[in-house]
Length: 137
Image (cartoon, rainbow, N blue to C red; front, side):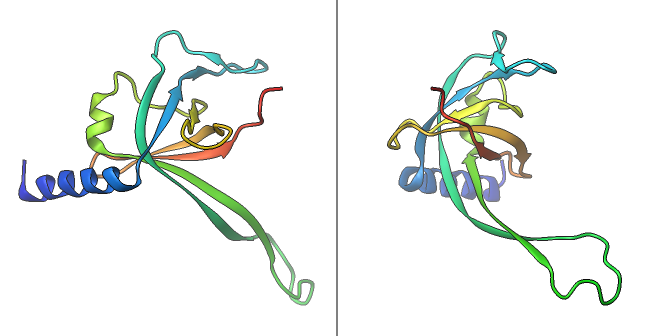
């Protein structure tokens, strides 16, 4: 390991110690025209990571002819992410995948999010891009 790797591990541990919260990862299988079901080949686990959500404003881009469009259309939404440090990832038996769920167990109502994308960093961390799941009635 390099000095940079050691510094990254120390920094990740410090950030995790202050900001991390527990989350339950539930692996799911997806099939066309069927509701997602639990994946029997990957175990459910509890991890600690950093959840963040905030407003996002995007421009909708498309084709327009000169003089037909006086402005741009904006889309306002919320971006939600869950960051997991390299040390926590190394302890997992299987990596999270698109369609799996993340339940924030320490928050009121234990909100459930589906993973829409898994982003790997060059340092071995993961950022899970999340979308809110509808509550089960």
